[in-house]
Image 1 (spheres, rainbow, N blue to C red):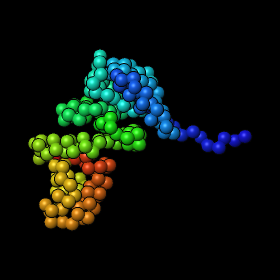
Image 2: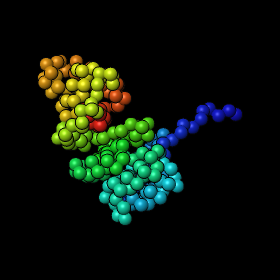
Image 3: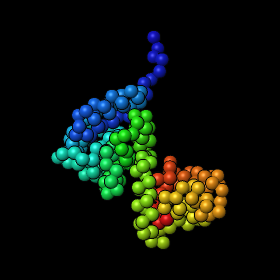
Image 4: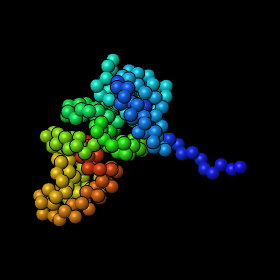
Length: 223
């Protein structure tokens, strides 16, 4: 009798959280998804590093505050030793300093523990594809912080030859400052629909999924 179909390759997930109840809850949620598999659990950052080295998970859900080694340091070491292993920080803390420490350490996602199971599963899939995902409430803080940062040297700025028109570059600057489409439309005397079309084109040209990723890329390019 022939096999009807091959089993899909599952995304292998490692859980790192010092609370057993949280790990049990996350395992239960994730194993409801056909394409996700929890391959291990760690109760601190050091254990997470050891398990990641042996299990080679695709994605690690990393808490921040843990004994022995915290999640930020574990993320930093994991990014250096196993760059193919992607980290999503999953925490109760939305303090700006912790957010930026986690992102600088190499996390590709930052979610709060009030996220739904569906949103968490979607974030794991997005990060596994090589994307990045930051919860909207956290993303607003990231964009607000970027608006206060000095611009990079002008030699790094985008030129028309880099694929963005002058108008697109102008709109990207405002996106990086955290302005909404409506606010940009008022600033530039455009319709909100026109701004939305520009933003969609910008995301496509930059190869990113959302406004937060575009802002991150813009800062790196000097916008």
